[in-house]
Image 1 (tube, helix red, strand yellow):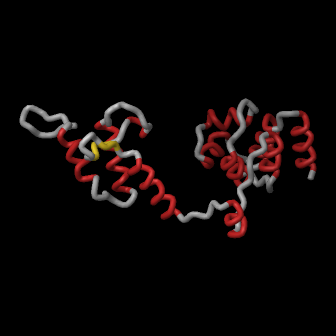
Image 2 (spheres, one colour):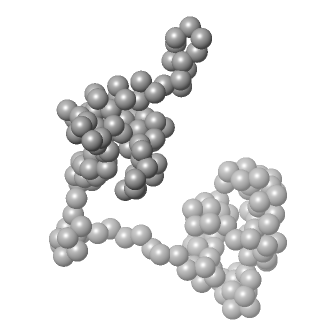
Image 3 (tube, rainbow, N blue to C red):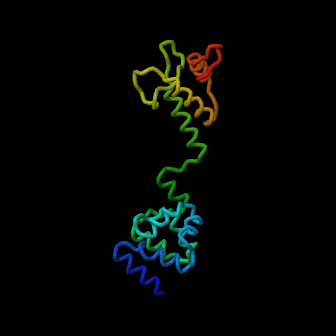
Length: 184
């Protein structure tokens, strides 16, 4: 209880981490290096937290709170200093009211459609590839962007009837070494 009142007073003064983290670490009889190792940071990073120069991020605060036996005190203090949005479960009714209910499969299918919608078509109606950053412009398709587009398309469900022509377009523009082997 006394530690909690002290912690609350330090929070009100503006920089609690300068004292409370060190006190909790010493109470747990741990070195800076040991705490740093257990939460997956360098000792120098932990020292900056302990001296109040920087504050640990949310997940690290939770790890420190558990490791140092702070019973939520570190989490409460960190939230007072740097409020973070709380994650919460979302129920089906809320999703329906926002119109944002989509399965991962639907999101991926939508991404695939959007990628295919950006496919460039030449004057003969043949698909040629994708432009840099997929932005509409008068620029010709980029070999690199097209290669990435094909790779993404493969991950999003595979080719459609237009993509073999696009693959040929990329391969025709590939760099060859002296023996005729493609190297890029």
